Image (cartoon, rainbow, N blue to C red; front, side, top):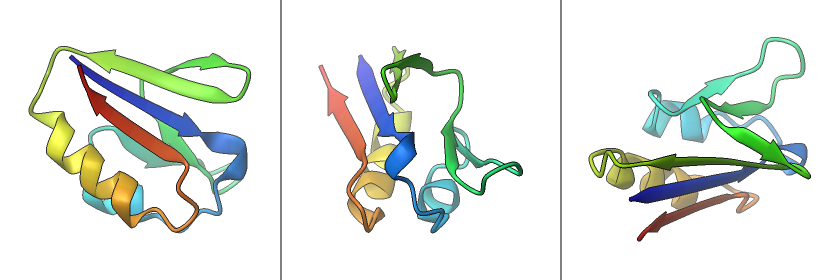
Length: 76
């Protein structure tokens, strides 16, 4: 299972996550910050749990590319 977490309020809108993992991330037209698609918000932490291990590599690249380190990706 892949667990992806985004701290959206700290996003600076660089767009790297969308470029590297477009199936999981999208940029908001309202505020220019990243959106983790199909996520649940819990006190500013947006989380997705997926059984699709194929998304791990793209999300891990997005996590490493993020200049403010607000994306966490775990394969459990």
